[in-house]
Length: 472
Ligand code: GLN
Image (tube, rainbow, N blue to C red; front, top):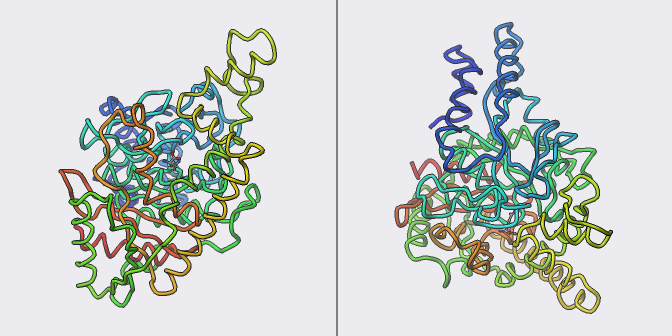
């Protein structure tokens, strides 16, 4: 297992070149092809950039620790001149004319993007089975889902193709695949990272974040990609922090909130035992466990699916067959052009969500569903604010059980939606969350989710590092 840190060290000492690392990454992509983690491999572009990084280093002009390190990005992140599909036939031939801010910042460190990773179509899903380019396989256990929607990025890290990758998280899409594949995944506070150049799913919930093998690597990447952006006026003006500043601080003296609703019925017994064992170890390290309550959390999944689909139906209206998207070959009038292009270009899950979203926004139902869901969103945010009055961070499961068996996205969408129970509330409240492996259940890794106060990523990562230290 290579980390960003170890690769940066090897490059620095001259033990390895960037070309060598990129070549290794590219051949690993070939070897692990059956996992289907990548939609587009950027071989030539990556090798050219690796050579530039090597040249800079040889001339003593290296632009930072990540200069020349291979990384991967989810295929809903625009990168100039490369195909950016969002896992959809709708965009299967779309070449991005500009680069997402987060990716631009990543490339500005010299990091080399080796490929665009597979994902649920338009990031809708938790199983990585709704992609037009086929499902992604879990490298640890082929019969189980890798988690979604950023499954390709999680698998690329878990199978050591790259040490780190970017994904996006609207309701759990970084944290769930990280948990299913046994890696670390971080969803930053809403507004911490620019969404410019991220193909929108639900704009008030979407946030870009990193995957890595270690908490430290996630801290490093967050520092690279965060910050205010003139192209996204929801980004915060807060200055960039050294998010790794407190990684060695330990957990002694900190209070960990344990929401009673999260450890009640519905959580797999073995997963629960693994999480509780981890929490008692933290207690032994000097943390204080405090039961907290999130009384409205039972409504999180339903309000999330109303708000997310409402926003999605609006965001996806731009794919009309006229401009840059898929166009039906069988359209003979304007109505056909819209209806056939959208029916053929979007997959089943996306169509289901456009229908649901249009329904909850339609006159007559708007007040009953959409407005209600927004009110619940406020109540959930208030619940978290209240809980945080008596604790520093909140601990919870990431998934209700083992990663589901493959096929669920197709046969039982409801089971898939319900598996979002622990993750969507953070997006509704805009809070940062990190998932990291804390034990095993049924031969699979169990992800512990830590939830932080808004913009308190440094403290959140500090608590995560304490979990990492005791889980080794
Ligand atoms: N599973 C959730 C959904 O399908 C979250 C997806 C995401 O975070 N992109 O909406």
